[in-house]
Image (cartoon, rainbow, N blue to C red):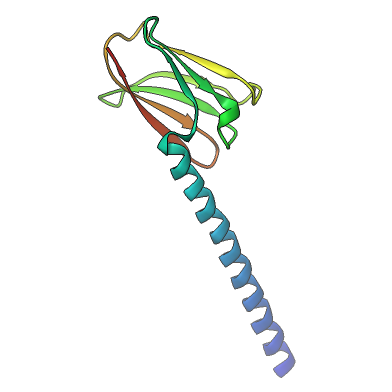
Length: 120
């Protein structure tokens, strides 16, 4: 009986350690997203033509979708970019949408990175 109890306690301890390690990995990834959100990804602007360029190579996660929202939160554009190469420079053309404030969301399978854009 003591042997069964000891084995159970050992398994419980190991599973708890594994869960704690997985949780630490998730927390580290969240910190990476926060850092990425603070302008660590390349966003080049051609203000004259209202085209913005996103350099995928400078982003440390693989993107699945790019979403463009207006200031009311309405989705104006949703583009699946999962199949694009990691060295892609993505062109985001704002000319059909006019002047205003927008939010660009770069989505991966594990998080979302946002950037505010103002078109004049």
